[in-house]
Image (cartoon, rainbow, N blue to C red; front, side, top):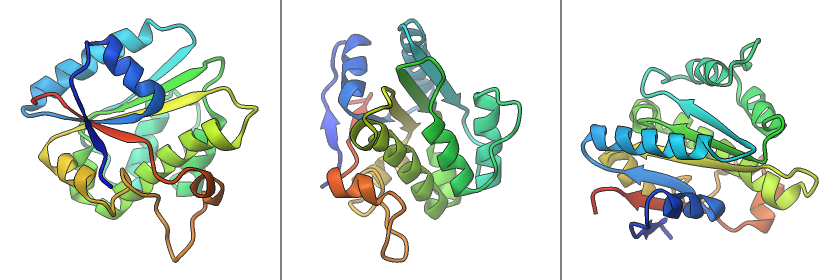
Length: 197
């Protein structure tokens, strides 16, 4: 079952309401339209109380080490995230300090998708699974984490792939490190949002 395509809600309130329940895959051509959307969304989210916004820049991060460095810089960390999936997951599970909402905007996410689809899938699964842990597994954590992935046709094709991590949880070697999530949430709550109709 592929992510449902959202109708264009009233902007920006409607998009923020979509983020209450879903992660978004925002698709548009040309790139400038995505950039303008991301800029407007960021301004709106930053104005919300108790909200942390993390902007992951376009391109460049095509390896796990580079992605972890990029995330460390985006979070203004004193020490970089260890360049491993475990290090990344530990960081995401720590959540933001003194914020009830944390939004990640991943600009031009299809750059990594094109470079390494397996790594992209693992990163998507990690972000979405940790977000689901906050909501469904750990009742003591009052943080809502949401991802906004921006891209073009390649990201759109991945979003339509029922074996991709916008549609299903990742299992590696027949198991998943997020078994608690997969046992209570049947699929990632992802919505595709087309800016160009």
